[in-house]
Image 1: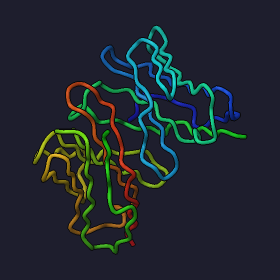
Image 2: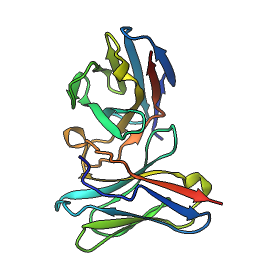
Image 3: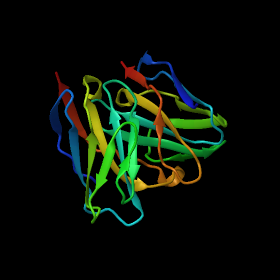
Image 4: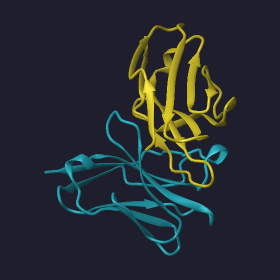
Length: 113
Length: 113
């Protein structure tokens, strides 16, 4: 089972910031928070990940609360192409036998004109 | 830059027929490789992962098998397909040495009739 809880759906106006929340109250000290998204009929796309500090890259920002029990993915200026299912995943930061990303149901973000 | 290829993109096969899906990665060496399946309306399920040539681990018992004959080639097979094998099959790779960012291929949509 997924270790995260996300709202099933959200709407956002084009050009506005999209803030996607995620609860992960059982996260352990060495687990990272990963975000992926899946546009319809495509493979998932890695967005960002972090341990405890806030992170930013060209796609998004990740805000992790001080107690690490929740986080928010921020798309600063959402476009129609950001319409997708967004997955928040908690996992160890190495692959192979520990690389099993458990994708839950995610949040379906609809960006509207 | 790294790229991941999967083929075919779509496939319709009758029950009881064999299956072979291929995944290749370019631009990296000795990657971790993964096969996932996404059934209609459901999340991704990890089927197999591989940390090296000839090294395959299965995450769930099933009608499928995987092989890694070359460093950057990962094959998913079945001797006799079942209706329940229908789904969207995704191959992914990640680097060794501490980063679990997984990069997904475009996927193969399999329909078993």
